[in-house]
Image (tube, rainbow, N blue to C red; front, side, top):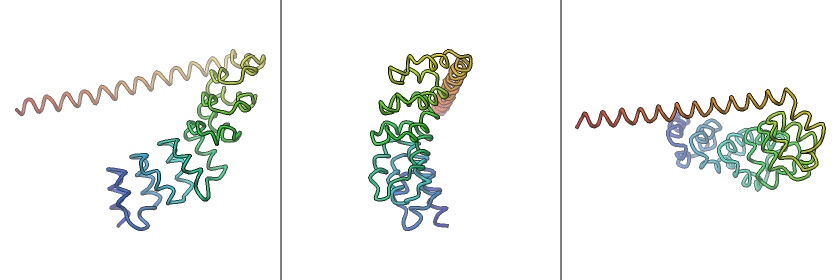
Amino acid sequence: EDVEIVLDAVKQDGRALAYAEGWTRTNREVVRQALRQTWEVAKFVLECKQPELFVEVVKQDWKVVRDLWRMPTPPTQADWEAMAAANPDILQAHELRGNRAVVLAAVSTRGLALRWASPELRDDEEVVRKAMESHPEALWEASGRLRYDKQLREIYDSGAMQARRRKIKTDLEKEEELEKQAVAAIQAECDSDLLSEESGD
């Protein structure tokens, strides 16, 4: 019963977690719901010490990896890889830029995240190929040597890469259209409320 009350509260405002007491404050579902509302409660994940929640945190704000890194028992290699796949922005943390497996996980999700990898990994052909599978233009984030590698340039100019570029463009256009529709819907609702207020006056 206590959990249900806290769950209802954090669904309304994630910061309500600060007022939870006892074990409900570190309940997995309670923390997950709070994180979905605001990244400001990320510090409570440190109290939970539940690695499966780390991914939820970095989806909200990659900068929390610095706190996770300083934990007495920091995340495992597998945890870092899962977090990189969930939010490639974590490669901006200097501690992770040279971690090959983490970089591979990140660029598999977002190829252009290659720009944050260490110079050594931007000169790693396998890493660059993996990044290009996600986004062909990742080639231009690679080292100078690999940007003009004959095989990689052939891959870049291939039909498969051209198809990938078209899909990325189409997906981006769809996202932009959905954003426009969402903005229009909000504006229409605001206009409707305003008209209601005016008619009421």
